[in-house]
Amino acid sequence: MRNDMELLKEMKKKKIGVLLGGLSEEREISLKTGNAVLGALRSKGYKAVAIDAGRDLAARLASERIEAAFMALHGRYGEDGCVQGLLEVMGIPYTGSGVRSSALCMDKVAAKKMMIFHGVSTPKFCVFREDERGVLAKLPKLPLVVKPVAEGSAIGVSIVRSKAALAAAVDSALRYGGAALAEEFIEGRELTVSILNGRVLPTIEIRPREGFYDFHAKYTKGATGFLVPAPLSALAGKRVAACGLGAYAALGCSGAARVDVMLDANSVPYALEVNTIPGLTELSLFPRAAAAAGLDYPALVEEMLLGAGLNKA
Ligand SMILES: Nc1ncnc2c1ncn2[C@@H]1O[C@H](COP(=O)(O)OP(=O)(O)O)[C@@H](O)[C@H]1O
Ligand SMILES: [Mg+2]
Image (cartoon, rainbow, N blue to C red):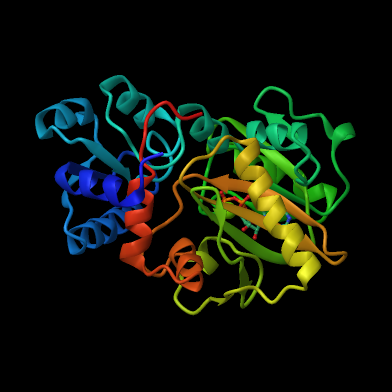
């Protein structure tokens, strides 16, 4: 293996494209992530340019002649493997997970199936599709969490405490297309495990002031408290880290990824989902975890860049 200094020197000569914006619902947050990354790369002396990943992305990549891509896209096209596929075809190394891993993580049901196969703990669930809504028999017991299979940012997520409320929750999740996932509600503490190039960073505990970590709690200043590192017993800490790393490995992730985990009253962790392009504004969860591990923001961005490659899972 070549050493990091050599890799770093080589990367400094390259033209780096920060892929940001894009076509998904999460465009605005992606612009914030991308601009923060761009600033950090430039502060470290990299030649970096911003590339808005629109319909003309292939032409832009060709005309800008970038030699490595930093993925700062969230949601559809950017986080789901599509852009990664284009970069593979063009031979441009990129940060984060590969095509298959990105696609699997974007589909919460596919991701849960992989986790179960690999023995990673995840809440019991069933799936509702547009054409088969009557499968109540297989439903885990109440309360339930109902969510779209392929959205992020807690969009379309509801907690269902009675059978009467189920239909409306399924309808609301189905509004985002695809299928609705009904999952056993895990009463407990909300945690997130950040993993960088296979290394587990300190776990963060998320404490919304009221209700759960919904869209409001995520994007309203002061609506949520964060504890870094999460105050966990040695045993719980170990279990949570193993659950996060297990999900990352089961799904074949590379580079940075963040695993959302619930910890129940018996200190049993459950992985909810894996975010393959976590938010990277300076206030986002992933950079907070990195800071707790002694990596400041520019150092984190640089370490992500040095993990860029091709032909990942
Ligand atoms: N099974 C569950 N038990 C308890 N809370 C849940 C469960 N599933 C989701 N939640 C809550 O909803 C939030 C969003 O769900 P998540 O699966 O992380 O989807 P996304 O973040 O992509 O919208 C979680 O952060 C958590 O607060
Ligand atoms: Mg989440």
